[in-house]
Image 1 (cartoon, rainbow, N blue to C red):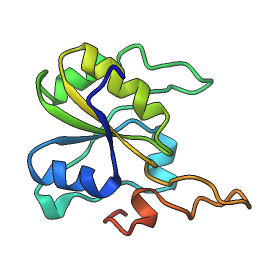
Image 2: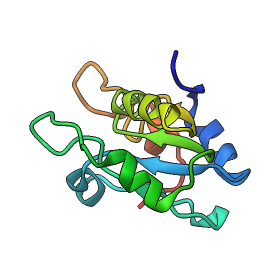
Image 3: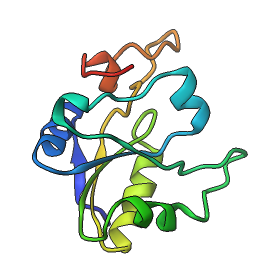
Length: 130
């Protein structure tokens, strides 16, 4: 594993409460149409930096954009839809000098047998979002 490790959504909340930065690496469309984590109760705001730019292409400016909002060496908890893209982003951030954790289950979680994302994840674990 080339990143700090995996944490549950609840553990990610606790890490943000302790000073980690939540980095949401989903797409603009996901942020707008599905929702975003609300960590305002922790006096914090997520950093929104897309990992993919559509058509499966990684954002070549991801690390530059990350460095514009978060100093290297900072602890990060990285979130995507289901916990897959966030692993790649956490690996890249770790290689760039951050301590990056992947949030298991992501924002929406795994699909159930009908394809609905109602099983787990940030939203389904009743963590704040809007």
